[in-house]
Image 1 (cartoon, rainbow, N blue to C red):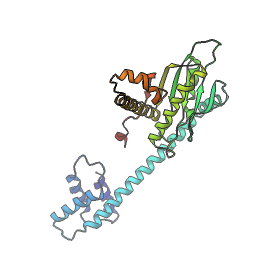
Image 2: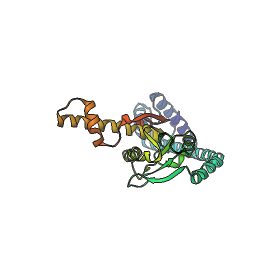
Image 3: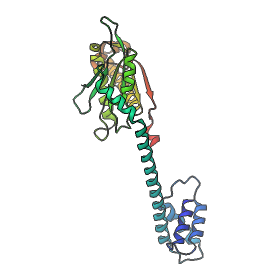
Image 4: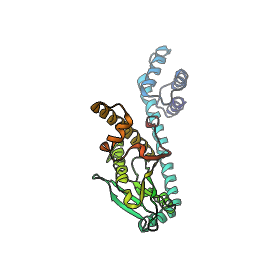
Length: 291
């Protein structure tokens, strides 16, 4: 239908030779139904085949192909530009409507005494985290801990995005830790996973100083953060299994439980089994299907 529409328009303004509309109709009928966006090669092949079967050997196949392809590309670019403008206007309207809420939580983020901001957990850029500590009385029991990884499309994420969830957890007596990480193009996904891993290690090593219970830690992530959290758990599980296998080969012990209990702490200060739960919210786990 795109080919037919494009060639009809070109014929009307004098770009295509005679019978271009009829040729495009025949070309469109010959194309498979599942062809979503015809390329220059497909168009040229179909037009060449039709020209060989045509009663007019003087048909200029190349000019028809070039003009037809140019028209289709112009239509696609116009559609893209129009869609981009509409999406930008919708984004601006969405931002204006939510601006009062954003300003409210931004003010609380910088003024609330329960938030310990910008704690460095690693040497590279953006390796900071925020700890939301509930107010508690002296001698209170250790509090559960939630480690949160924010989203942002791997490009615009920031730990401050979780301020609303962090304040809510603090009100419920839960320590909330938001781990920041480098965004693209400062890093790729493996580098982001490495950042998050260092942040989780910091929590297990230091959260006790804030009254957190290291035996009751949950990991959560939203959107891109859910993908990074899942990748962290998978990578760390594979590393733990590899370490256990190497330890078994070097010691001659086949009991994996014994190996884990005796040598895992030499590998890292935390294990995947130390986490109570992982919750991924709206995470794009199969990125190839979105490409």
